[in-house]
Image (cartoon, rainbow, N blue to C red; front, side, top):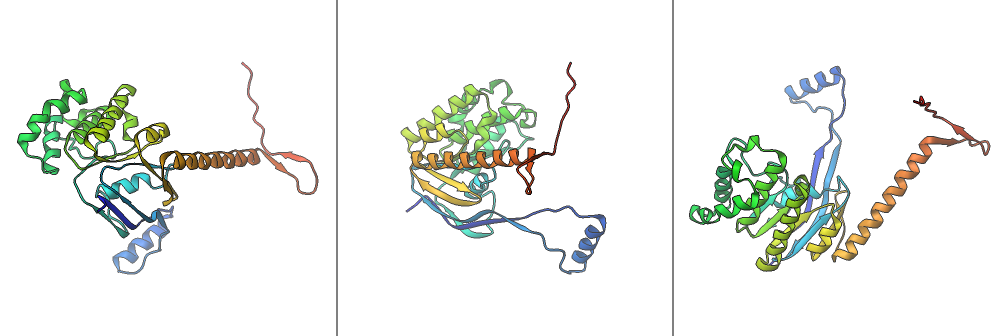
Length: 282
Protein backbone atom coordinates (compact mmCIF):
# COMPACT_ATOMS: atom_id res chain seq x y z
CA UNK A 1 0.00 0.00 0.00
CA UNK A 2 1.46 3.42 -0.96
CA UNK A 3 2.62 5.65 1.89
CA UNK A 4 1.31 8.68 -0.06
CA UNK A 5 -1.64 8.83 -2.47
CA UNK A 6 -2.59 11.94 -4.42
CA UNK A 7 -5.85 11.59 -6.33
CA UNK A 8 -7.21 14.29 -8.67
CA UNK A 9 -5.68 17.03 -6.52
CA UNK A 10 -6.76 20.51 -7.59
CA UNK A 11 -6.03 23.78 -5.78
CA UNK A 12 -7.62 27.03 -6.93
CA UNK A 13 -6.96 30.57 -5.74
CA UNK A 14 -8.88 33.76 -6.41
CA UNK A 15 -6.81 36.32 -8.26
CA UNK A 16 -6.79 39.85 -6.89
CA UNK A 17 -7.37 42.76 -9.25
CA UNK A 18 -7.01 46.51 -9.11
CA UNK A 19 -10.26 48.38 -8.54
CA UNK A 20 -11.16 52.00 -7.99
CA UNK A 21 -12.83 53.31 -4.85
CA UNK A 22 -16.31 53.11 -6.41
CA UNK A 23 -16.00 49.42 -7.33
CA UNK A 24 -14.52 48.55 -3.94
CA UNK A 25 -17.38 50.29 -2.11
CA UNK A 26 -20.05 48.69 -4.30
CA UNK A 27 -18.59 45.20 -3.78
CA UNK A 28 -18.43 45.75 -0.02
CA UNK A 29 -22.08 46.88 0.06
CA UNK A 30 -23.13 43.87 -2.01
CA UNK A 31 -21.43 41.50 0.41
CA UNK A 32 -23.06 43.24 3.38
CA UNK A 33 -26.50 42.84 1.77
CA UNK A 34 -25.77 39.23 0.70
CA UNK A 35 -25.70 40.14 -2.98
CA UNK A 36 -23.21 38.60 -5.38
CA UNK A 37 -20.12 40.77 -5.63
CA UNK A 38 -18.10 41.01 -8.80
CA UNK A 39 -16.72 37.56 -9.53
CA UNK A 40 -12.94 37.28 -9.42
CA UNK A 41 -10.89 35.21 -11.80
CA UNK A 42 -9.66 31.90 -10.42
CA UNK A 43 -6.19 30.44 -10.85
CA UNK A 44 -5.37 26.73 -10.66
CA UNK A 45 -2.08 26.29 -8.81
CA UNK A 46 -2.58 22.51 -9.08
CA UNK A 47 -4.74 20.96 -11.77
CA UNK A 48 -5.87 17.31 -11.45
CA UNK A 49 -2.58 15.96 -10.06
CA UNK A 50 -2.34 12.18 -9.56
CA UNK A 51 0.52 10.03 -8.23
CA UNK A 52 1.39 7.44 -5.58
CA UNK A 53 4.62 7.15 -3.58
CA UNK A 54 5.79 3.87 -2.06
CA UNK A 55 7.56 3.62 1.29
CA UNK A 56 11.31 4.24 0.96
CA UNK A 57 11.10 6.16 -2.31
CA UNK A 58 13.09 9.36 -2.71
CA UNK A 59 11.15 11.66 -5.02
CA UNK A 60 12.35 14.95 -6.45
CA UNK A 61 9.82 17.55 -7.58
CA UNK A 62 11.08 20.04 -10.16
CA UNK A 63 9.64 22.75 -12.40
CA UNK A 64 9.77 26.45 -13.16
CA UNK A 65 8.85 29.03 -10.52
CA UNK A 66 5.07 29.02 -10.18
CA UNK A 67 4.72 25.44 -11.45
CA UNK A 68 2.99 24.35 -8.21
CA UNK A 69 5.86 22.62 -6.38
CA UNK A 70 5.58 24.33 -2.99
CA UNK A 71 1.78 24.23 -3.15
CA UNK A 72 1.96 20.47 -3.64
CA UNK A 73 4.28 20.02 -0.66
CA UNK A 74 1.97 22.08 1.56
CA UNK A 75 -0.86 19.68 0.73
CA UNK A 76 1.31 16.66 1.49
CA UNK A 77 2.25 18.23 4.85
CA UNK A 78 -1.43 18.98 5.58
CA UNK A 79 -0.73 22.71 5.73
CA UNK A 80 -3.14 23.48 2.89
CA UNK A 81 -6.46 21.89 1.94
CA UNK A 82 -7.39 20.94 -1.65
CA UNK A 83 -10.17 22.58 -3.62
CA UNK A 84 -10.88 19.19 -5.18
CA UNK A 85 -9.44 15.70 -4.88
CA UNK A 86 -7.68 14.08 -1.94
CA UNK A 87 -4.28 13.51 -0.37
CA UNK A 88 -3.79 10.36 1.72
CA UNK A 89 -0.65 10.14 3.88
CA UNK A 90 0.00 6.95 5.84
CA UNK A 91 2.66 7.96 8.34
CA UNK A 92 4.09 10.88 10.28
CA UNK A 93 5.53 13.82 8.34
CA UNK A 94 8.48 16.06 9.20
CA UNK A 95 8.16 19.08 6.89
CA UNK A 96 10.80 21.70 6.21
CA UNK A 97 8.88 23.83 3.73
CA UNK A 98 9.63 27.48 4.45
CA UNK A 99 11.68 29.56 6.85
CA UNK A 100 9.96 29.63 10.23
CA UNK A 101 7.48 26.88 9.39
CA UNK A 102 6.79 24.60 12.34
CA UNK A 103 8.42 26.86 14.93
CA UNK A 104 6.94 29.29 17.42
CA UNK A 105 8.94 32.56 17.23
CA UNK A 106 8.14 33.43 20.85
CA UNK A 107 9.69 30.21 22.16
CA UNK A 108 13.39 29.46 22.44
CA UNK A 109 15.14 27.02 20.14
CA UNK A 110 15.17 24.40 22.92
CA UNK A 111 11.45 24.85 23.61
CA UNK A 112 10.68 24.50 19.90
CA UNK A 113 12.49 21.17 19.81
CA UNK A 114 10.16 19.80 22.50
CA UNK A 115 7.14 21.40 20.81
CA UNK A 116 7.89 19.67 17.50
CA UNK A 117 8.46 16.37 19.28
CA UNK A 118 5.06 16.67 20.96
CA UNK A 119 3.37 17.40 17.62
CA UNK A 120 4.95 14.24 16.14
CA UNK A 121 3.92 12.22 19.21
CA UNK A 122 7.49 11.53 20.37
CA UNK A 123 7.80 10.97 24.15
CA UNK A 124 9.84 13.48 26.17
CA UNK A 125 12.19 10.70 27.26
CA UNK A 126 13.17 10.00 23.65
CA UNK A 127 13.60 13.65 22.71
CA UNK A 128 15.83 14.26 25.75
CA UNK A 129 18.08 11.49 24.45
CA UNK A 130 18.29 13.21 21.06
CA UNK A 131 18.44 16.80 22.32
CA UNK A 132 22.24 17.10 22.24
CA UNK A 133 22.35 15.61 18.73
CA UNK A 134 19.82 18.17 17.44
CA UNK A 135 21.61 21.12 19.05
CA UNK A 136 25.03 19.95 17.88
CA UNK A 137 23.91 19.47 14.27
CA UNK A 138 22.20 22.88 14.20
CA UNK A 139 25.42 24.64 15.27
CA UNK A 140 23.28 26.86 17.53
CA UNK A 141 24.69 25.91 20.95
CA UNK A 142 25.16 29.57 21.95
CA UNK A 143 21.64 30.58 20.87
CA UNK A 144 19.53 27.54 21.73
CA UNK A 145 17.92 29.30 24.72
CA UNK A 146 17.26 32.50 22.76
CA UNK A 147 13.75 33.17 21.35
CA UNK A 148 13.56 32.08 17.71
CA UNK A 149 12.21 35.52 16.70
CA UNK A 150 15.76 36.80 17.21
CA UNK A 151 17.22 34.19 14.84
CA UNK A 152 18.28 35.06 11.30
CA UNK A 153 16.60 33.17 8.46
CA UNK A 154 19.70 30.97 8.13
CA UNK A 155 19.60 30.10 11.85
CA UNK A 156 15.91 29.22 11.61
CA UNK A 157 16.66 26.87 8.71
CA UNK A 158 19.43 25.20 10.70
CA UNK A 159 17.11 24.62 13.64
CA UNK A 160 14.22 23.44 11.47
CA UNK A 161 16.31 20.99 9.46
CA UNK A 162 18.00 19.60 12.57
CA UNK A 163 14.62 18.95 14.20
CA UNK A 164 13.02 17.51 11.05
CA UNK A 165 15.83 15.07 10.28
CA UNK A 166 16.47 13.90 13.84
CA UNK A 167 12.84 13.11 14.66
CA UNK A 168 11.76 9.59 13.72
CA UNK A 169 9.14 10.69 11.19
CA UNK A 170 8.18 8.32 8.37
CA UNK A 171 8.27 11.02 5.68
CA UNK A 172 10.69 13.92 5.27
CA UNK A 173 9.57 16.83 3.08
CA UNK A 174 12.20 19.41 2.12
CA UNK A 175 11.54 22.51 0.03
CA UNK A 176 14.03 24.96 -1.54
CA UNK A 177 14.35 26.50 1.93
CA UNK A 178 17.84 24.97 2.27
CA UNK A 179 19.12 27.56 -0.19
CA UNK A 180 18.90 30.11 2.64
CA UNK A 181 21.65 28.41 4.65
CA UNK A 182 25.38 28.76 4.05
CA UNK A 183 27.13 26.42 1.61
CA UNK A 184 28.87 24.40 4.33
CA UNK A 185 25.58 23.72 6.10
CA UNK A 186 23.87 22.82 2.80
CA UNK A 187 26.58 20.21 2.21
CA UNK A 188 26.04 18.91 5.73
CA UNK A 189 22.27 18.70 5.17
CA UNK A 190 22.58 16.74 1.94
CA UNK A 191 25.01 14.32 3.60
CA UNK A 192 22.49 13.71 6.36
CA UNK A 193 19.67 13.20 3.86
CA UNK A 194 21.81 10.64 2.02
CA UNK A 195 22.33 8.84 5.33
CA UNK A 196 18.58 8.89 6.06
CA UNK A 197 17.89 7.48 2.61
CA UNK A 198 20.55 4.75 2.57
CA UNK A 199 20.66 3.68 6.21
CA UNK A 200 17.12 4.32 7.44
CA UNK A 201 15.11 3.86 4.24
CA UNK A 202 12.98 6.95 4.87
CA UNK A 203 10.52 8.29 2.34
CA UNK A 204 11.80 11.69 1.19
CA UNK A 205 10.31 14.38 -1.05
CA UNK A 206 12.62 17.15 -2.22
CA UNK A 207 11.90 20.35 -4.12
CA UNK A 208 15.05 21.95 -5.49
CA UNK A 209 16.40 23.96 -8.41
CA UNK A 210 19.70 22.14 -7.97
CA UNK A 211 19.17 19.47 -10.62
CA UNK A 212 22.48 17.74 -9.88
CA UNK A 213 21.46 17.19 -6.27
CA UNK A 214 18.09 15.88 -7.43
CA UNK A 215 19.77 13.40 -9.78
CA UNK A 216 22.14 12.33 -7.02
CA UNK A 217 19.61 11.82 -4.23
CA UNK A 218 16.41 10.74 -5.96
CA UNK A 219 15.31 7.50 -7.60
CA UNK A 220 12.29 9.19 -9.15
CA UNK A 221 11.46 12.72 -10.31
CA UNK A 222 8.14 14.46 -10.96
CA UNK A 223 8.16 17.43 -13.35
CA UNK A 224 5.39 19.98 -12.77
CA UNK A 225 4.41 22.55 -15.37
CA UNK A 226 1.55 25.03 -14.90
CA UNK A 227 0.07 22.96 -12.07
CA UNK A 228 0.06 19.66 -13.98
CA UNK A 229 2.40 16.67 -14.03
CA UNK A 230 4.32 16.86 -17.28
CA UNK A 231 6.44 13.78 -16.59
CA UNK A 232 6.98 11.24 -13.78
CA UNK A 233 9.90 8.87 -14.35
CA UNK A 234 13.57 8.17 -13.70
CA UNK A 235 15.74 11.20 -12.77
CA UNK A 236 17.88 11.34 -15.93
CA UNK A 237 14.91 11.22 -18.27
CA UNK A 238 12.79 13.78 -16.40
CA UNK A 239 15.71 16.16 -15.83
CA UNK A 240 16.52 16.09 -19.55
CA UNK A 241 12.90 17.01 -20.28
CA UNK A 242 13.22 19.89 -17.81
CA UNK A 243 16.40 21.14 -19.52
CA UNK A 244 14.58 21.17 -22.88
CA UNK A 245 11.70 23.05 -21.26
CA UNK A 246 14.12 25.64 -19.90
CA UNK A 247 15.84 26.00 -23.28
CA UNK A 248 12.51 26.63 -25.01
CA UNK A 249 11.57 29.24 -22.40
CA UNK A 250 14.91 31.04 -22.84
CA UNK A 251 14.44 31.07 -26.63
CA UNK A 252 10.96 32.57 -26.24
CA UNK A 253 12.21 35.21 -23.80
CA UNK A 254 15.07 36.17 -26.12
CA UNK A 255 12.67 36.37 -29.04
CA UNK A 256 10.39 38.72 -27.12
CA UNK A 257 13.36 40.83 -26.06
CA UNK A 258 14.59 41.18 -29.63
CA UNK A 259 11.20 42.14 -31.05
CA UNK A 260 10.78 44.79 -28.35
CA UNK A 261 13.91 46.60 -29.56
CA UNK A 262 13.10 46.73 -33.27
CA UNK A 263 9.87 46.78 -35.29
CA UNK A 264 9.78 45.76 -38.96
CA UNK A 265 7.72 48.01 -41.22
CA UNK A 266 5.21 45.80 -43.05
CA UNK A 267 5.16 47.81 -46.29
CA UNK A 268 8.92 47.51 -46.88
CA UNK A 269 12.06 45.75 -45.78
CA UNK A 270 13.10 48.66 -43.61
CA UNK A 271 13.57 48.41 -39.87
CA UNK A 272 12.15 51.15 -37.69
CA UNK A 273 14.13 52.00 -34.57
CA UNK A 274 11.65 52.68 -31.76
CA UNK A 275 13.95 53.31 -28.81
CA UNK A 276 17.24 55.17 -28.26
CA UNK A 277 19.18 55.73 -25.04
CA UNK A 278 22.05 58.26 -24.93
CA UNK A 279 24.61 57.77 -22.17
CA UNK A 280 26.98 60.53 -21.05
CA UNK A 281 30.60 59.57 -21.39
CA UNK A 282 32.54 60.18 -18.20
